[in-house]
Length: 68
Image (cartoon, rainbow, N blue to C red):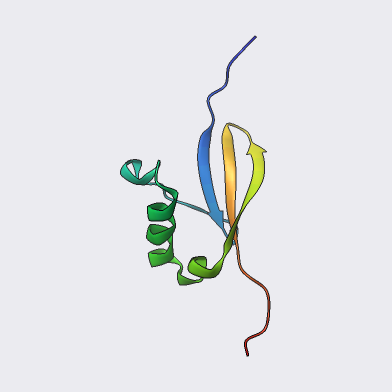
């Protein structure tokens, strides 16, 4: 039996986002940090996109809808 350690990767619009080590364990703070790079992340939902290689991918997906 082999144990593989996965790193968590955050992705938005096909771009892998940086994860500062001091924010890796705080999802709310990490979302705020990513929103400084891409403001629509504040209204996006986070979806588990599965495992790709040695990374567990979490993807921010924009909310689709109409204003009004």
